[in-house]
Amino acid sequence: MIHPTAVVDPDAELGREVTVGPYAVIGPGVQIGDGTRIGPHAVVFGPTTIGRDNRIYQFASIGDDPQDKKYAGESTRLEIGDRNTIREFCTLNRGTAQDEGVTRIGNDNWIMAYVHVAHDCVVGNDCVLANNTTLAGHVKVGDFVVLGGFAGVHQYCRIGVHAFLAMFSGVTRDVPAYCMVAGQPAVPKGVNAEGLKRRGFDQDQIRNIRNAYRTLYRSGLKLEQALAQIESEASGRPEIGEFAASIRASTRSVVR
Image (cartoon, rainbow, N blue to C red; front, side):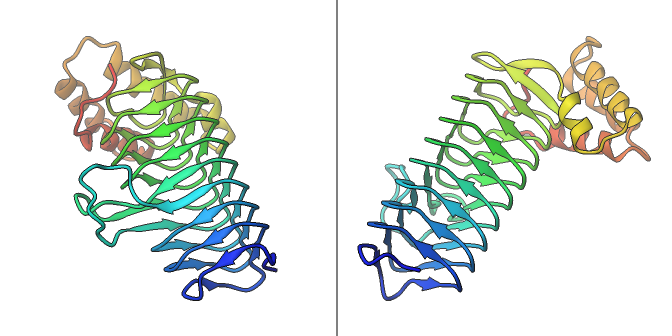
């Protein structure tokens, strides 16, 4: 399953039925789970752990040094889960000692061509990162997030679960759960209702989220006042609790 032109370091650990394409390079400290396919000319450096049944396409650069001038050769990691699709020319870098030392990609993500995931980012599960999406260092992306083509996220920003970033969005502050944003800088444009329907949210849950969104963005209340009101309505409504928690966790303030 390893093409004769591929270069696989003896220190690399490959699971069962792993495929390594022509001229691919697998460096030391790399662990690849069962059934994962590495495309032609892809390069995987370590320490990097890749789970099961991933598809990494040609010319991707996985697990190389972080693009951070403070990086001084410390041992840091990249961890990729299961069943991810990573398309052509993606660059996924390891972490830095200034954070937890690890960049993490979850499961079942669709990462399209030319995407850059910088050092110390955390990407959840079932996300879509469209072509040329760029995550700066230390970005946190929740589950079921969609990032449109050429969207860019400033370092240390947080993107809440089920959020939607429109094409060319420039995110400089945190995006609460369920919200759609667009523009440069990105501003809120409503609730990602269509995405929520596709993921099984019922009409009552979506209505509750819309009411919470109106409290945050259209009530005229200051942020802390709006958040207190939203939290007071979260009992028995976990979707509202998630919305409130994503705002409470913000360290850069939320898009307004």
